[in-house]
Image 1: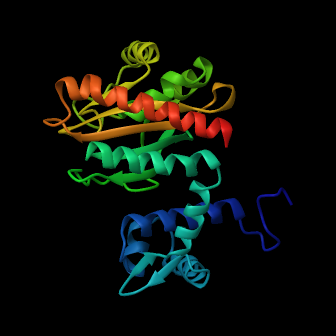
Image 2: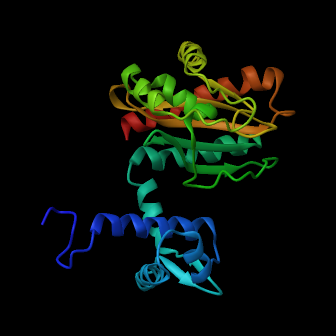
Length: 257
């Protein structure tokens, strides 16, 4: 046996891929029926049904007029975002930033070459976009993502950039590696990054990297809001100063935790 088949001759790697295809389809189409899933996915209806039944039995999907992702994923996700003390410490700073600015604040980390929302908080005037916890977005299209890339070891950031598809999220998204490299140099010099409608039309953001022991990049803090509010002196000076101070406090907390 080559390690990729079980005793019944089934391709277990392929079976796992099938399982995750079904999970991701249910997640993206909450309330989907078996017939709809089977029609949309490249698997036999019996295969889809067998996997859904297993997921339901294990608590990963529920059936209520269709299939939905189950709360078992919440348990796994909460464990994932609290596994590092630095992630837990960042939550307080995100909440403080949201309260002080009145805007949306978030803590984002890099995983598998993408930016992932770990914490988010809404201030009094915040715009509630679809930046849900766990959502993955391109690093090159966000203030936090660019801040992380700029603070990384150059060899590591180069590997990520080389593998990037440079997806154009909006008309303002950077899609050229050389242009991104120039911007990352500027971000590294000043210590913070801007997002000018690069991830969502009408939304601006400022982001700063968070470093841990030995200058390893842990993630980034950012504040985002409507472009008509995040502009001029507030956008270019007040928020960067606030974020740099907050980042310094968080890094001290992480270092002495």
